[in-house]
Amino acid sequence: MKKLVYHGSQKVIELPEFGMGNPNNDYGLGFYCTENIELAKEWASAADRDGYANSYEIELDGLTICNLSEGYNIMNWMAVLLENRTFDLPSGLAATARDYIMENFMPDYKGYDIVVGYRADDSYFTFAKDFLNNSISLQTLSEAMRLGKLGEQFVIKSKKAFAALRFIRADISRNEVYYPKKAGRDNTAREEYRAKRAVSNPIEGTYVIDIIREKWQNDDERLQ
Image (tube, rainbow, N blue to C red; front, side, top):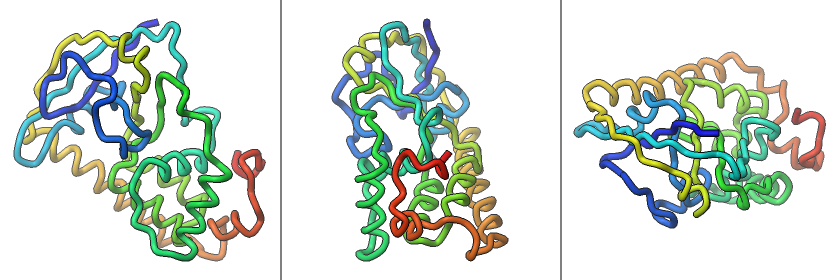
């Protein structure tokens, strides 16, 4: 089965190279794409310059896919994010929460050819840090992940998956059109998040300190 995917960049990339890129992205080293060309154009654009939405066809037959949005829970996503992204966490509860989540909720995602999951843009990163600091509940975190519709990432991880990519074309992303859309999407997520926090009851819900004290594990039915 073939699928179209798109990579937003400041340049045309006809031949993506395995092993290149930033190892501290959401899901580690890989080639980060989306199935939505409009999102790719937003991710490609900067405030002062245009970008490109590179289009590819990928043959999925024979490839393994770990979709963190299906069959996994929000704590699995948090564990992966904590392993790969750089968090400036104070000592104390936040650091304890990080260690507990990574020890007890880390999914086996590294052996897959492709990883699919949330995109931890600036706003999502804020939500995750607030959860670690015990400022928002697990329920609020789960709801926040759907705010602003920042989209899912389709990440090419293995040499085998890179070999299955075929470049099609590159469409220009005009910064005057797509940068405001990108900024607006993030601002919408932040505004909806602030509104949700303003009306939430801090006494209700499950917080990270509850998860640690009650020794939740990955198979806990409350995570379903």
